[in-house]
Length: 109
Length: 115
Image (cartoon, rainbow over all chains, first blue to last red; front, side):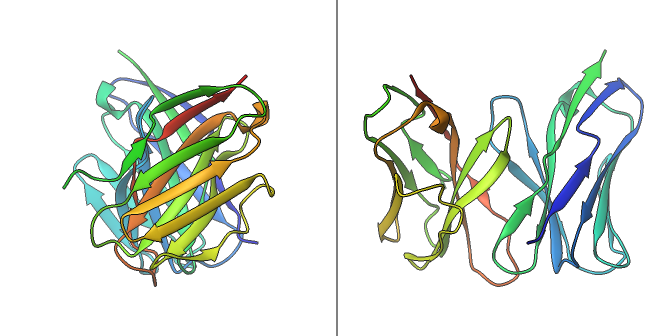
């Protein structure tokens, strides 16, 4: 079945620095979604990418969908303490989302 | 809109007891999902309903788990009998329509502890 791998599992970032989390699928995806879960909270939808090579930005967050639609990345610039949480990618080929294990981000002030 | 509503928010029970988790999806959403989240296994899809009909229950761990959706505004996930390994956070999520997997709106979750 479809598997979505996400790396790194943990990311410790100095406030103000940039980082990237990566998502890879074993199969071609029709779309990929990204969610953020704050500590003790629930996953909250951030964005969906559908087109090959698509790039979308939300303020300091940049999301990319690979040309082959099998990988994606989330890049955060100038990390802030509000960026703390776990970022999940979720790949889809129909109704079902396959979630990656997530990248848990901690920020050093 | 109040978002997806789940109850209870926390449940502590003893092994062997029946547990019922409840979910009210966002009004107008056709799809409902139950997930389980643990440190070891991450976020797992248990069951998916579309228009109140169970479409995919391949993620339901075993016969001790059952889910129902008697109408468009209510769903339950039942565990009978419960076991310590069922301890997890259970999320309900809803989405507007099937097809190209539109965004899912998650409820706050029920943290279940089975002693």
